[in-house]
Image (cartoon, rainbow, N blue to C red; front, side, top):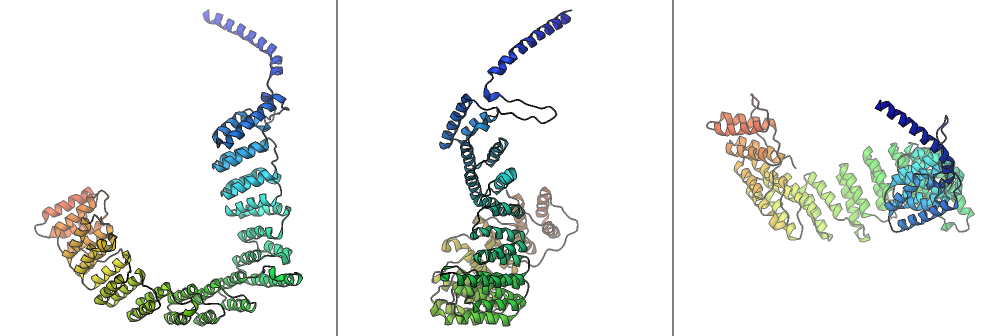
Length: 618
Protein backbone atom coordinates (compact mmCIF):
# COMPACT_ATOMS: atom_id res chain seq x y z
CA UNK A 1 0.00 0.00 0.00
CA UNK A 2 2.89 2.38 0.78
CA UNK A 3 4.43 1.67 -2.64
CA UNK A 4 1.21 2.37 -4.58
CA UNK A 5 0.46 5.54 -2.61
CA UNK A 6 4.04 6.81 -3.32
CA UNK A 7 3.70 5.99 -7.05
CA UNK A 8 0.45 7.95 -7.29
CA UNK A 9 1.96 11.00 -5.59
CA UNK A 10 5.07 10.83 -7.84
CA UNK A 11 2.95 10.82 -11.02
CA UNK A 12 0.79 13.70 -9.76
CA UNK A 13 3.84 15.86 -9.01
CA UNK A 14 5.39 14.99 -12.40
CA UNK A 15 2.31 16.18 -14.28
CA UNK A 16 2.38 19.52 -12.43
CA UNK A 17 6.07 20.07 -13.29
CA UNK A 18 5.41 19.46 -17.00
CA UNK A 19 2.61 22.04 -17.01
CA UNK A 20 4.91 24.59 -15.38
CA UNK A 21 7.70 24.03 -17.92
CA UNK A 22 5.28 24.54 -20.83
CA UNK A 23 4.13 27.81 -19.33
CA UNK A 24 7.74 29.09 -18.86
CA UNK A 25 9.07 28.00 -22.28
CA UNK A 26 8.01 31.11 -24.30
CA UNK A 27 9.43 33.40 -21.63
CA UNK A 28 12.73 31.54 -21.57
CA UNK A 29 13.02 31.69 -25.36
CA UNK A 30 12.53 35.47 -25.28
CA UNK A 31 15.05 36.15 -22.50
CA UNK A 32 17.74 33.76 -23.76
CA UNK A 33 21.21 35.36 -24.28
CA UNK A 34 22.32 35.65 -27.96
CA UNK A 35 25.51 33.76 -27.20
CA UNK A 36 23.54 30.56 -26.52
CA UNK A 37 21.02 30.85 -29.36
CA UNK A 38 21.78 27.81 -31.45
CA UNK A 39 19.17 25.36 -32.74
CA UNK A 40 20.09 21.79 -33.55
CA UNK A 41 18.22 20.40 -36.51
CA UNK A 42 18.58 16.65 -36.78
CA UNK A 43 15.55 15.43 -38.73
CA UNK A 44 17.00 12.72 -41.00
CA UNK A 45 20.28 14.59 -41.39
CA UNK A 46 23.39 15.69 -39.44
CA UNK A 47 22.87 18.44 -36.88
CA UNK A 48 24.09 21.88 -37.92
CA UNK A 49 24.40 25.14 -36.06
CA UNK A 50 22.32 28.15 -37.07
CA UNK A 51 24.18 31.31 -36.06
CA UNK A 52 21.93 34.30 -35.46
CA UNK A 53 23.19 37.79 -35.99
CA UNK A 54 25.03 38.90 -32.83
CA UNK A 55 23.63 41.81 -30.91
CA UNK A 56 25.51 44.77 -29.52
CA UNK A 57 26.00 43.21 -26.10
CA UNK A 58 27.57 40.06 -27.54
CA UNK A 59 29.82 42.11 -29.82
CA UNK A 60 30.98 44.14 -26.85
CA UNK A 61 31.75 40.94 -24.93
CA UNK A 62 33.68 39.53 -27.90
CA UNK A 63 35.66 42.74 -28.36
CA UNK A 64 36.56 42.90 -24.67
CA UNK A 65 37.64 39.25 -24.63
CA UNK A 66 39.72 39.73 -27.76
CA UNK A 67 41.53 42.68 -26.19
CA UNK A 68 42.29 40.62 -23.09
CA UNK A 69 43.66 37.70 -25.16
CA UNK A 70 45.82 40.01 -27.26
CA UNK A 71 47.23 41.52 -24.09
CA UNK A 72 48.00 38.06 -22.70
CA UNK A 73 49.77 37.11 -25.93
CA UNK A 74 51.84 40.27 -25.81
CA UNK A 75 52.88 39.25 -22.29
CA UNK A 76 53.90 35.78 -23.56
CA UNK A 77 51.00 34.18 -21.64
CA UNK A 78 50.05 31.84 -24.47
CA UNK A 79 48.51 29.09 -22.31
CA UNK A 80 46.23 31.52 -20.45
CA UNK A 81 45.14 33.14 -23.69
CA UNK A 82 44.40 29.76 -25.24
CA UNK A 83 42.35 28.61 -22.24
CA UNK A 84 40.37 31.86 -22.36
CA UNK A 85 39.75 31.32 -26.07
CA UNK A 86 38.46 27.80 -25.42
CA UNK A 87 35.73 29.13 -23.08
CA UNK A 88 34.26 30.88 -26.11
CA UNK A 89 34.93 27.92 -28.38
CA UNK A 90 32.73 25.59 -26.32
CA UNK A 91 29.48 27.42 -27.12
CA UNK A 92 30.40 28.53 -30.64
CA UNK A 93 31.16 32.18 -29.87
CA UNK A 94 34.70 31.83 -31.28
CA UNK A 95 33.20 32.39 -34.75
CA UNK A 96 32.84 36.09 -33.92
CA UNK A 97 36.55 36.67 -33.27
CA UNK A 98 38.57 38.60 -35.85
CA UNK A 99 41.31 37.31 -38.11
CA UNK A 100 43.79 39.41 -36.14
CA UNK A 101 43.20 37.34 -33.00
CA UNK A 102 43.41 34.04 -34.86
CA UNK A 103 46.65 35.19 -36.49
CA UNK A 104 48.14 36.17 -33.13
CA UNK A 105 47.14 32.85 -31.53
CA UNK A 106 48.50 30.82 -34.45
CA UNK A 107 51.80 32.71 -34.56
CA UNK A 108 52.26 32.29 -30.80
CA UNK A 109 51.47 28.57 -31.10
CA UNK A 110 54.12 28.22 -33.81
CA UNK A 111 56.69 30.00 -31.66
CA UNK A 112 56.13 27.63 -28.73
CA UNK A 113 55.97 24.56 -30.97
CA UNK A 114 52.27 23.75 -30.44
CA UNK A 115 51.58 22.64 -34.00
CA UNK A 116 48.50 20.64 -32.97
CA UNK A 117 46.97 23.89 -31.69
CA UNK A 118 47.80 25.56 -35.01
CA UNK A 119 45.90 22.92 -36.97
CA UNK A 120 42.97 23.07 -34.53
CA UNK A 121 42.68 26.86 -34.89
CA UNK A 122 42.87 26.63 -38.66
CA UNK A 123 40.13 24.01 -38.73
CA UNK A 124 38.03 26.28 -36.52
CA UNK A 125 38.47 29.08 -39.06
CA UNK A 126 37.50 26.69 -41.83
CA UNK A 127 34.32 25.62 -40.01
CA UNK A 128 33.11 29.17 -39.54
CA UNK A 129 33.55 29.82 -43.24
CA UNK A 130 36.31 32.41 -42.83
CA UNK A 131 38.52 33.31 -45.79
CA UNK A 132 41.86 34.43 -44.34
CA UNK A 133 43.70 37.20 -46.14
CA UNK A 134 46.81 36.70 -48.26
CA UNK A 135 48.97 38.41 -45.63
CA UNK A 136 47.68 35.96 -43.02
CA UNK A 137 48.75 32.98 -45.13
CA UNK A 138 52.11 34.51 -46.02
CA UNK A 139 53.05 35.12 -42.40
CA UNK A 140 51.77 31.75 -41.17
CA UNK A 141 53.44 29.67 -43.88
CA UNK A 142 56.71 31.58 -43.65
CA UNK A 143 56.88 30.88 -39.93
CA UNK A 144 56.05 27.19 -40.38
CA UNK A 145 58.61 26.80 -43.17
CA UNK A 146 61.38 28.61 -41.30
CA UNK A 147 60.90 26.22 -38.38
CA UNK A 148 60.76 23.20 -40.71
CA UNK A 149 57.16 22.25 -39.84
CA UNK A 150 56.58 20.92 -43.34
CA UNK A 151 53.85 18.48 -42.28
CA UNK A 152 51.81 21.43 -41.01
CA UNK A 153 52.24 23.20 -44.38
CA UNK A 154 50.88 20.15 -46.18
CA UNK A 155 47.98 19.95 -43.71
CA UNK A 156 47.04 23.53 -44.58
CA UNK A 157 46.87 22.65 -48.26
CA UNK A 158 44.81 19.55 -47.48
CA UNK A 159 42.34 21.58 -45.36
CA UNK A 160 41.92 24.70 -47.49
CA UNK A 161 42.88 23.53 -50.99
CA UNK A 162 41.50 25.81 -53.71
CA UNK A 163 40.47 28.47 -51.20
CA UNK A 164 44.13 29.39 -50.68
CA UNK A 165 45.12 32.53 -52.62
CA UNK A 166 47.14 32.02 -55.81
CA UNK A 167 50.12 33.86 -54.37
CA UNK A 168 53.72 32.92 -55.20
CA UNK A 169 54.95 33.39 -51.62
CA UNK A 170 52.17 31.17 -50.26
CA UNK A 171 52.68 28.40 -52.79
CA UNK A 172 56.46 28.63 -52.74
CA UNK A 173 56.28 27.81 -49.00
CA UNK A 174 53.87 24.94 -49.68
CA UNK A 175 55.89 23.51 -52.58
CA UNK A 176 59.20 23.79 -50.73
CA UNK A 177 57.57 22.12 -47.75
CA UNK A 178 56.43 19.20 -49.90
CA UNK A 179 59.90 18.84 -51.45
CA UNK A 180 61.67 19.00 -48.08
CA UNK A 181 59.17 16.50 -46.68
CA UNK A 182 60.06 13.99 -49.40
CA UNK A 183 56.66 14.10 -51.14
CA UNK A 184 57.35 15.64 -54.57
CA UNK A 185 54.01 14.38 -55.87
CA UNK A 186 52.28 16.87 -53.58
CA UNK A 187 54.56 19.63 -54.86
CA UNK A 188 53.70 18.73 -58.46
CA UNK A 189 49.98 18.99 -57.65
CA UNK A 190 50.49 22.60 -56.51
CA UNK A 191 52.41 23.83 -59.57
CA UNK A 192 49.28 24.89 -61.53
CA UNK A 193 48.17 27.21 -58.70
CA UNK A 194 51.73 28.50 -58.41
CA UNK A 195 51.72 29.41 -62.11
CA UNK A 196 48.50 31.39 -61.62
CA UNK A 197 50.44 33.94 -59.57
CA UNK A 198 52.43 36.70 -61.21
CA UNK A 199 55.70 34.78 -61.71
CA UNK A 200 58.93 36.43 -62.73
CA UNK A 201 61.53 34.40 -64.68
CA UNK A 202 63.63 33.75 -61.56
CA UNK A 203 60.57 32.31 -59.78
CA UNK A 204 60.63 29.34 -62.18
CA UNK A 205 63.54 27.80 -60.24
CA UNK A 206 60.97 26.15 -57.98
CA UNK A 207 59.38 24.42 -60.97
CA UNK A 208 62.72 22.95 -62.01
CA UNK A 209 63.42 21.79 -58.44
CA UNK A 210 60.13 19.93 -58.50
CA UNK A 211 60.91 18.41 -61.90
CA UNK A 212 64.27 17.14 -60.57
CA UNK A 213 62.54 15.47 -57.62
CA UNK A 214 59.87 13.95 -59.88
CA UNK A 215 62.32 12.99 -62.65
CA UNK A 216 59.97 14.76 -65.12
CA UNK A 217 62.23 15.60 -68.06
CA UNK A 218 59.37 16.44 -70.46
CA UNK A 219 57.81 19.08 -68.20
CA UNK A 220 61.25 20.56 -67.51
CA UNK A 221 61.83 20.79 -71.28
CA UNK A 222 58.53 22.66 -71.84
CA UNK A 223 59.40 25.22 -69.18
CA UNK A 224 62.92 25.55 -70.59
CA UNK A 225 61.65 26.30 -74.09
CA UNK A 226 59.00 28.70 -72.78
CA UNK A 227 61.57 30.76 -70.88
CA UNK A 228 64.10 30.86 -73.69
CA UNK A 229 66.52 33.74 -73.21
CA UNK A 230 65.15 34.35 -69.70
CA UNK A 231 66.75 31.14 -68.45
CA UNK A 232 69.30 31.33 -65.67
CA UNK A 233 72.30 29.09 -65.11
CA UNK A 234 70.66 27.57 -62.01
CA UNK A 235 67.53 26.60 -63.93
CA UNK A 236 69.60 25.13 -66.77
CA UNK A 237 71.70 23.09 -64.34
CA UNK A 238 68.56 21.73 -62.69
CA UNK A 239 67.23 20.75 -66.13
CA UNK A 240 70.51 19.00 -66.94
CA UNK A 241 70.46 17.22 -63.58
CA UNK A 242 66.95 15.98 -64.33
CA UNK A 243 68.22 14.44 -67.57
CA UNK A 244 71.28 12.92 -65.90
CA UNK A 245 69.16 11.35 -63.15
CA UNK A 246 66.99 9.89 -65.91
CA UNK A 247 70.20 8.48 -67.52
CA UNK A 248 69.82 10.66 -70.65
CA UNK A 249 73.21 12.43 -70.98
CA UNK A 250 72.86 12.98 -74.74
CA UNK A 251 69.57 14.79 -74.19
CA UNK A 252 71.24 16.92 -71.52
CA UNK A 253 74.03 17.87 -73.92
CA UNK A 254 71.42 18.93 -76.49
CA UNK A 255 69.75 21.25 -73.98
CA UNK A 256 73.17 22.67 -73.08
CA UNK A 257 73.83 23.54 -76.73
CA UNK A 258 70.36 25.09 -77.05
CA UNK A 259 70.97 27.13 -73.91
CA UNK A 260 74.19 28.43 -75.45
CA UNK A 261 72.13 29.59 -78.45
CA UNK A 262 69.76 31.42 -76.07
CA UNK A 263 72.77 33.00 -74.40
CA UNK A 264 74.22 34.24 -77.67
CA UNK A 265 70.86 35.73 -78.74
CA UNK A 266 70.49 37.46 -75.38
CA UNK A 267 73.98 38.94 -75.73
CA UNK A 268 73.20 40.34 -79.18
CA UNK A 269 69.90 41.91 -78.13
CA UNK A 270 71.14 43.40 -74.86
CA UNK A 271 72.73 46.85 -74.64
CA UNK A 272 75.10 45.76 -71.86
CA UNK A 273 75.72 42.04 -72.47
CA UNK A 274 78.76 41.99 -70.17
CA UNK A 275 76.50 42.68 -67.17
CA UNK A 276 74.31 39.63 -67.80
CA UNK A 277 75.16 36.37 -66.10
CA UNK A 278 75.85 33.59 -68.61
CA UNK A 279 73.32 30.78 -68.86
CA UNK A 280 75.97 28.09 -69.44
CA UNK A 281 78.73 27.83 -66.85
CA UNK A 282 81.29 25.31 -65.61
CA UNK A 283 78.67 23.54 -63.48
CA UNK A 284 76.61 22.90 -66.63
CA UNK A 285 79.46 21.04 -68.30
CA UNK A 286 80.39 19.26 -65.07
CA UNK A 287 76.84 17.93 -64.82
CA UNK A 288 76.91 16.58 -68.36
CA UNK A 289 80.40 15.11 -67.87
CA UNK A 290 79.17 13.36 -64.76
CA UNK A 291 76.30 11.88 -66.78
CA UNK A 292 78.62 10.51 -69.45
CA UNK A 293 80.99 9.19 -66.77
CA UNK A 294 78.14 7.32 -65.06
CA UNK A 295 77.20 5.84 -68.44
CA UNK A 296 80.80 4.66 -68.95
CA UNK A 297 81.28 6.92 -72.00
CA UNK A 298 84.78 8.26 -71.33
CA UNK A 299 85.38 9.65 -74.88
CA UNK A 300 82.24 11.78 -74.61
CA UNK A 301 83.55 13.14 -71.31
CA UNK A 302 86.68 14.36 -73.06
CA UNK A 303 84.58 15.83 -75.87
CA UNK A 304 82.76 17.94 -73.30
CA UNK A 305 86.07 18.88 -71.68
CA UNK A 306 87.52 20.17 -74.97
CA UNK A 307 84.25 21.92 -75.83
CA UNK A 308 84.15 23.86 -72.58
CA UNK A 309 87.76 24.93 -73.04
CA UNK A 310 86.90 26.18 -76.56
CA UNK A 311 84.33 28.51 -74.98
CA UNK A 312 86.91 29.84 -72.45
CA UNK A 313 85.41 27.91 -69.55
CA UNK A 314 88.25 26.55 -67.43
CA UNK A 315 87.68 23.12 -65.84
CA UNK A 316 87.66 23.14 -62.07
CA UNK A 317 88.40 20.60 -59.36
CA UNK A 318 85.07 18.84 -59.87
CA UNK A 319 85.78 18.43 -63.58
CA UNK A 320 89.19 16.86 -63.06
CA UNK A 321 88.00 14.77 -60.13
CA UNK A 322 85.13 13.26 -62.13
CA UNK A 323 87.40 12.47 -65.07
CA UNK A 324 90.15 11.00 -62.90
CA UNK A 325 87.74 8.69 -61.07
CA UNK A 326 86.44 7.52 -64.42
CA UNK A 327 89.94 6.83 -65.75
CA UNK A 328 90.94 4.91 -62.65
CA UNK A 329 87.74 2.88 -62.71
CA UNK A 330 88.39 1.92 -66.35
CA UNK A 331 92.14 1.53 -65.70
CA UNK A 332 92.71 3.89 -68.64
CA UNK A 333 96.06 5.42 -67.75
CA UNK A 334 96.41 7.04 -71.16
CA UNK A 335 93.34 9.13 -70.43
CA UNK A 336 94.62 9.78 -66.92
CA UNK A 337 97.89 11.06 -68.36
CA UNK A 338 95.92 13.40 -70.59
CA UNK A 339 94.07 14.77 -67.58
CA UNK A 340 97.33 15.35 -65.72
CA UNK A 341 98.75 17.16 -68.74
CA UNK A 342 95.71 19.41 -68.87
CA UNK A 343 96.05 20.03 -65.16
CA UNK A 344 99.75 20.93 -65.07
CA UNK A 345 100.10 22.45 -68.56
CA UNK A 346 96.89 24.44 -68.56
CA UNK A 347 96.46 28.16 -68.04
CA UNK A 348 94.83 27.81 -64.64
CA UNK A 349 97.15 27.75 -61.60
CA UNK A 350 97.82 24.32 -60.22
CA UNK A 351 95.90 23.82 -57.00
CA UNK A 352 97.65 21.91 -54.20
CA UNK A 353 94.48 20.29 -52.94
CA UNK A 354 93.51 19.19 -56.44
CA UNK A 355 96.95 17.73 -57.17
CA UNK A 356 96.93 15.91 -53.83
CA UNK A 357 93.55 14.44 -54.72
CA UNK A 358 95.01 13.20 -58.00
CA UNK A 359 97.97 11.70 -56.18
CA UNK A 360 95.58 9.86 -53.86
CA UNK A 361 93.74 8.56 -56.90
CA UNK A 362 96.92 7.25 -58.50
CA UNK A 363 98.03 5.62 -55.24
CA UNK A 364 94.62 3.99 -54.87
CA UNK A 365 94.95 2.68 -58.42
CA UNK A 366 98.44 1.35 -57.58
CA UNK A 367 100.06 3.81 -60.01
CA UNK A 368 102.70 5.11 -57.63
CA UNK A 369 105.18 6.19 -60.40
CA UNK A 370 102.49 8.43 -61.90
CA UNK A 371 101.77 9.90 -58.46
CA UNK A 372 105.49 10.67 -58.02
CA UNK A 373 105.56 12.28 -61.47
CA UNK A 374 102.79 14.65 -60.45
CA UNK A 375 104.57 15.28 -57.14
CA UNK A 376 107.73 16.32 -59.01
CA UNK A 377 105.66 18.73 -61.10
CA UNK A 378 104.22 20.20 -57.88
CA UNK A 379 107.75 20.70 -56.55
CA UNK A 380 108.72 22.45 -59.79
CA UNK A 381 105.81 24.85 -59.41
CA UNK A 382 106.42 25.48 -55.73
CA UNK A 383 107.21 29.14 -56.44
CA UNK A 384 103.64 29.60 -57.70
CA UNK A 385 102.22 28.68 -54.30
CA UNK A 386 101.09 25.24 -55.44
CA UNK A 387 103.79 23.04 -53.96
CA UNK A 388 103.14 19.85 -51.98
CA UNK A 389 101.84 20.25 -48.46
CA UNK A 390 101.96 18.00 -45.40
CA UNK A 391 98.98 15.96 -46.67
CA UNK A 392 100.73 15.32 -49.99
CA UNK A 393 103.83 14.04 -48.23
CA UNK A 394 101.79 11.89 -45.86
CA UNK A 395 99.98 10.18 -48.74
CA UNK A 396 103.22 9.42 -50.61
CA UNK A 397 105.14 8.28 -47.51
CA UNK A 398 102.37 5.83 -46.65
CA UNK A 399 102.38 4.59 -50.26
CA UNK A 400 106.12 3.81 -50.07
CA UNK A 401 105.72 2.18 -46.64
CA UNK A 402 102.93 -0.05 -47.96
CA UNK A 403 105.27 -0.98 -50.83
CA UNK A 404 107.95 -1.85 -48.18
CA UNK A 405 110.26 0.83 -49.67
CA UNK A 406 111.37 2.53 -46.49
CA UNK A 407 114.40 4.16 -48.10
CA UNK A 408 112.31 6.28 -50.49
CA UNK A 409 109.87 7.08 -47.73
CA UNK A 410 112.77 8.54 -45.73
CA UNK A 411 113.88 10.57 -48.76
CA UNK A 412 110.42 12.12 -48.87
CA UNK A 413 110.85 13.06 -45.18
CA UNK A 414 114.02 14.93 -46.16
CA UNK A 415 112.09 16.74 -48.92
CA UNK A 416 109.38 17.59 -46.41
CA UNK A 417 111.79 19.20 -43.95
CA UNK A 418 113.64 20.98 -46.77
CA UNK A 419 110.35 22.50 -47.91
CA UNK A 420 109.86 23.99 -44.45
CA UNK A 421 107.26 21.55 -43.17
CA UNK A 422 107.37 19.73 -39.82
CA UNK A 423 106.43 16.03 -39.67
CA UNK A 424 103.36 15.16 -37.63
CA UNK A 425 102.29 12.09 -35.67
CA UNK A 426 100.67 10.55 -38.78
CA UNK A 427 103.94 10.59 -40.71
CA UNK A 428 105.79 9.26 -37.66
CA UNK A 429 103.29 6.40 -37.39
CA UNK A 430 103.75 5.56 -41.09
CA UNK A 431 107.54 5.45 -40.72
CA UNK A 432 107.38 3.26 -37.61
CA UNK A 433 105.11 0.91 -39.52
CA UNK A 434 107.76 0.78 -42.27
CA UNK A 435 110.44 -0.08 -39.73
CA UNK A 436 108.24 -2.89 -38.41
CA UNK A 437 107.79 -4.28 -41.94
CA UNK A 438 111.56 -4.49 -42.51
CA UNK A 439 112.36 -5.39 -38.88
CA UNK A 440 114.67 -2.39 -38.32
CA UNK A 441 114.25 -1.84 -34.59
CA UNK A 442 117.12 0.61 -34.08
CA UNK A 443 115.96 2.88 -36.93
CA UNK A 444 112.45 2.91 -35.53
CA UNK A 445 113.68 3.98 -32.08
CA UNK A 446 115.89 6.68 -33.61
CA UNK A 447 113.03 8.08 -35.71
CA UNK A 448 110.78 8.09 -32.67
CA UNK A 449 113.32 9.96 -30.52
CA UNK A 450 114.29 12.41 -33.29
CA UNK A 451 110.72 13.39 -34.11
CA UNK A 452 109.78 13.82 -30.48
CA UNK A 453 112.85 16.06 -30.16
CA UNK A 454 111.57 18.39 -32.91
CA UNK A 455 108.17 18.73 -31.25
CA UNK A 456 106.05 15.95 -32.71
CA UNK A 457 103.37 14.88 -30.24
CA UNK A 458 102.72 11.14 -30.55
CA UNK A 459 99.16 9.84 -30.68
CA UNK A 460 97.57 6.64 -29.43
CA UNK A 461 98.15 5.16 -32.90
CA UNK A 462 101.83 6.01 -32.62
CA UNK A 463 101.99 4.06 -29.36
CA UNK A 464 100.28 1.02 -30.91
CA UNK A 465 102.73 1.04 -33.83
CA UNK A 466 105.72 1.43 -31.51
CA UNK A 467 104.52 -1.52 -29.40
CA UNK A 468 104.16 -3.62 -32.52
CA UNK A 469 107.72 -2.72 -33.54
CA UNK A 470 109.07 -3.70 -30.10
CA UNK A 471 107.05 -6.92 -30.14
CA UNK A 472 108.21 -7.83 -33.65
CA UNK A 473 111.85 -7.44 -32.60
CA UNK A 474 111.45 -9.11 -29.18
CA UNK A 475 112.16 -5.96 -27.17
CA UNK A 476 109.46 -6.69 -24.60
CA UNK A 477 111.19 -4.98 -21.69
CA UNK A 478 111.40 -1.75 -23.70
CA UNK A 479 107.76 -2.09 -24.65
CA UNK A 480 106.85 -2.51 -20.99
CA UNK A 481 108.79 0.60 -19.99
CA UNK A 482 107.24 2.56 -22.85
CA UNK A 483 103.73 1.81 -21.61
CA UNK A 484 104.62 2.29 -17.94
CA UNK A 485 106.09 5.78 -18.49
CA UNK A 486 103.85 6.94 -21.34
CA UNK A 487 101.35 9.00 -19.33
CA UNK A 488 104.08 10.82 -17.43
CA UNK A 489 105.99 11.70 -20.62
CA UNK A 490 103.16 12.41 -23.08
CA UNK A 491 100.17 13.45 -21.02
CA UNK A 492 97.60 10.71 -21.67
CA UNK A 493 97.20 7.23 -20.27
CA UNK A 494 97.49 4.09 -22.40
CA UNK A 495 94.22 2.29 -23.02
CA UNK A 496 93.26 -1.38 -22.84
CA UNK A 497 94.23 -1.65 -26.51
CA UNK A 498 97.85 -0.77 -25.75
CA UNK A 499 98.12 -3.17 -22.81
CA UNK A 500 96.60 -5.98 -24.86
CA UNK A 501 99.03 -5.24 -27.70
CA UNK A 502 101.92 -5.45 -25.22
CA UNK A 503 100.69 -8.82 -23.92
CA UNK A 504 100.17 -10.14 -27.44
CA UNK A 505 103.77 -9.36 -28.41
CA UNK A 506 105.08 -11.16 -25.33
CA UNK A 507 102.90 -14.23 -25.88
CA UNK A 508 103.89 -14.45 -29.53
CA UNK A 509 107.50 -15.11 -28.42
CA UNK A 510 106.33 -17.22 -25.42
CA UNK A 511 107.45 -14.67 -22.83
CA UNK A 512 104.60 -15.61 -20.50
CA UNK A 513 105.98 -13.93 -17.39
CA UNK A 514 106.37 -10.60 -19.19
CA UNK A 515 102.82 -10.90 -20.50
CA UNK A 516 101.61 -11.44 -16.94
CA UNK A 517 103.60 -8.41 -15.75
CA UNK A 518 101.84 -6.32 -18.40
CA UNK A 519 98.49 -7.63 -17.12
CA UNK A 520 99.34 -6.71 -13.54
CA UNK A 521 100.51 -3.25 -14.66
CA UNK A 522 97.17 -2.73 -16.39
CA UNK A 523 95.26 -3.60 -13.21
CA UNK A 524 97.55 -1.37 -11.14
CA UNK A 525 96.77 1.51 -13.51
CA UNK A 526 93.00 0.87 -13.02
CA UNK A 527 92.53 -0.10 -16.66
CA UNK A 528 89.92 -2.84 -16.92
CA UNK A 529 90.57 -5.70 -19.37
CA UNK A 530 88.03 -6.41 -22.09
CA UNK A 531 87.04 -9.56 -23.99
CA UNK A 532 90.01 -9.28 -26.35
CA UNK A 533 92.44 -8.99 -23.43
CA UNK A 534 91.06 -12.12 -21.76
CA UNK A 535 90.88 -14.02 -25.06
CA UNK A 536 94.56 -13.13 -25.63
CA UNK A 537 96.00 -13.77 -22.17
CA UNK A 538 94.02 -16.77 -20.89
CA UNK A 539 95.13 -19.29 -23.59
CA UNK A 540 98.71 -18.10 -23.07
CA UNK A 541 98.60 -18.88 -19.38
CA UNK A 542 97.06 -22.28 -20.18
CA UNK A 543 99.89 -23.00 -22.63
CA UNK A 544 102.41 -21.99 -19.94
CA UNK A 545 100.51 -24.17 -17.39
CA UNK A 546 100.30 -21.28 -14.92
CA UNK A 547 97.10 -22.61 -13.41
CA UNK A 548 96.81 -20.13 -10.55
CA UNK A 549 96.97 -17.31 -13.09
CA UNK A 550 94.31 -19.04 -15.19
CA UNK A 551 91.97 -19.21 -12.21
CA UNK A 552 92.75 -15.57 -11.33
CA UNK A 553 91.96 -14.37 -14.85
CA UNK A 554 88.72 -16.37 -14.95
CA UNK A 555 87.69 -15.07 -11.54
CA UNK A 556 88.35 -11.47 -12.56
CA UNK A 557 86.32 -11.88 -15.74
CA UNK A 558 83.34 -13.75 -14.31
CA UNK A 559 83.15 -12.06 -10.89
CA UNK A 560 83.61 -8.48 -12.09
CA UNK A 561 80.71 -6.00 -11.64
CA UNK A 562 80.42 -5.96 -15.42
CA UNK A 563 81.00 -9.55 -16.45
CA UNK A 564 83.52 -10.13 -19.24
CA UNK A 565 82.44 -12.89 -21.60
CA UNK A 566 84.87 -15.71 -22.23
CA UNK A 567 84.33 -18.19 -25.03
CA UNK A 568 82.90 -21.49 -23.81
CA UNK A 569 85.51 -23.42 -25.78
CA UNK A 570 88.35 -21.45 -24.17
CA UNK A 571 87.13 -22.22 -20.64
CA UNK A 572 86.52 -25.88 -21.40
CA UNK A 573 89.99 -26.24 -22.90
CA UNK A 574 91.50 -24.63 -19.79
CA UNK A 575 89.50 -26.95 -17.51
CA UNK A 576 90.49 -30.01 -19.50
CA UNK A 577 94.21 -29.14 -19.40
CA UNK A 578 93.96 -28.40 -15.69
CA UNK A 579 92.32 -31.78 -15.00
CA UNK A 580 95.13 -33.53 -16.82
CA UNK A 581 97.85 -31.71 -14.86
CA UNK A 582 98.99 -33.37 -11.67
CA UNK A 583 98.18 -31.76 -8.35
CA UNK A 584 95.72 -29.24 -9.81
CA UNK A 585 92.46 -30.74 -8.64
CA UNK A 586 91.72 -27.80 -6.33
CA UNK A 587 92.26 -25.22 -9.09
CA UNK A 588 90.19 -27.31 -11.50
CA UNK A 589 87.35 -27.49 -8.97
CA UNK A 590 87.46 -23.72 -8.49
CA UNK A 591 87.30 -23.11 -12.24
CA UNK A 592 84.47 -25.61 -12.71
CA UNK A 593 82.47 -24.01 -9.89
CA UNK A 594 82.86 -20.56 -11.45
CA UNK A 595 81.78 -21.93 -14.82
CA UNK A 596 78.70 -23.53 -13.30
CA UNK A 597 77.77 -20.35 -11.44
CA UNK A 598 78.18 -18.40 -14.70
CA UNK A 599 75.97 -20.95 -16.54
CA UNK A 600 78.82 -21.94 -18.85
CA UNK A 601 78.21 -25.35 -20.39
CA UNK A 602 80.81 -27.91 -19.34
CA UNK A 603 81.63 -30.34 -22.10
CA UNK A 604 82.81 -33.89 -21.59
CA UNK A 605 85.23 -33.89 -24.51
CA UNK A 606 87.89 -31.19 -24.57
CA UNK A 607 90.06 -29.91 -27.34
CA UNK A 608 93.70 -28.98 -26.98
CA UNK A 609 94.35 -25.30 -26.30
CA UNK A 610 95.39 -23.02 -29.18
CA UNK A 611 99.12 -22.58 -29.65
CA UNK A 612 99.24 -19.20 -31.39
CA UNK A 613 98.09 -15.86 -30.12
CA UNK A 614 97.23 -12.72 -31.97
CA UNK A 615 96.19 -9.20 -31.15
CA UNK A 616 92.74 -8.62 -32.56
CA UNK A 617 92.32 -4.99 -31.48
CA UNK A 618 94.78 -3.68 -34.01
